[in-house]
Length: 284
Image 1 (tube, rainbow, N blue to C red):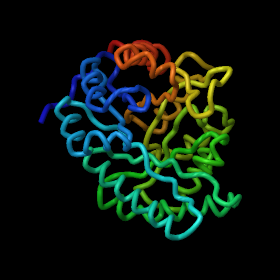
Image 2: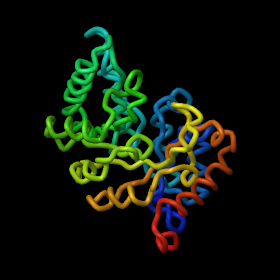
Image 3: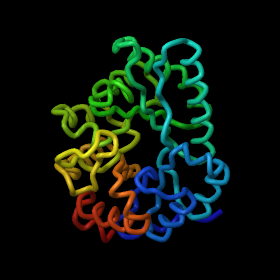
């Protein structure tokens, strides 16, 4: 097994979420290692091409670490049978996260069912509660990622960091926390208050940008520096509550993917240094 990769200057916390690029998992691992990017965040769909044990071995051999696994969740469903099936899928996701050595399984909680927003949110909370003991048994924490309200219908009825914090507080478990993705929370006038409220339950921090005009709801995230988000301000907020974990670049944008893996990674590294880390940190 390889020792951990020595990151390029300033990149000790940088993680590439693999949905950002259009490339195979093994190719992406190799590219990150060449670029001195020490963390990677795979998506579960990639295990159809590369079995999870093979992926874990390749990541470790390259000296990389896994910041998180995307994704679990999607708890609301029309009937009990389907809800149980989704819990089973989340259990498989926990197994995969444990095999990779990921400390966090990111939860995209799921959209509204039957026009019942209140009931759908309860299904989310019940689903997460059912995973707490299995998560503890596997040593993987559950990261609730609130999504922008425009995704409430189909992707997540948890649309503010405050709602995610409410769930964490009610469940009272160290095995659940929140993931702060700037694309989804930057607009919220209470975001910094809610980061402080989350405290040590912040389990992840994702960066990208909100570009104007927004080219697409799902695949419209911008490269850092191309939009309106004050990334350093939000990074300081999560740092202030003691978060020292990886900073994931997660961009869903076809123009970024069309650049090709090498060019996209070069631009990500440059923009990360320009917009996310503090002056002087780039040479540390």
